[in-house]
Length: 248
Image: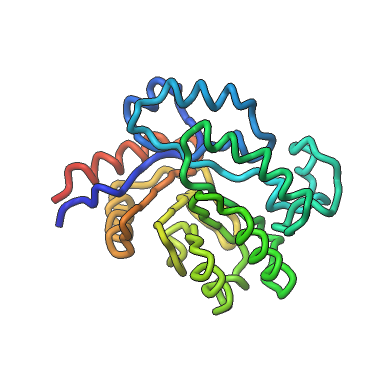
């Protein structure tokens, strides 16, 4: 079985110089957009520096997903206004979305990744808010969503939301199976001890072989594999990309 040409491999953030990165990989998930979005000129420069066939995906601003009362909220540069965050379908969140879209368009990005914190639990209010928020902001982008609380995965209504709104479930394939997807989007966070993530983790060749099996098992037309295992991300991403290219 040949390698699906639609499998793209990269890192969550540039782990080496952009010049070296562009020489080895064809995909990156932009992280600078998570805390406080950079200037649009920065995004324009990155797009100009990158090869034509290079793809940017974007991690959504935490102002959409996190609680204004959280300890890291100050990094957003926004007031602690409870109309923000937690995927609320509020005027404030939609205004932020209008500010955010031009960054994605400058990069030519097609996929935006929303990462909800573990404290964003499955309940009726959060489910209803997420449905209304996501149904209002697609604007031609592909939405990928990473939930980090088990209650979502245990509810058939979560699958229904994903299917209805064509949202792709983001998972670490070593630990979860995707519930639904228009695309496959994997974020590899390293190892785990209970609920704790061990980001500083180097995947072995045997583990990368297992990853290749999982990617093929759940393969769709478009597949994204992003390494987020700290200092070893770039090394493992290049190894995995080479394994895919040379497999038969």
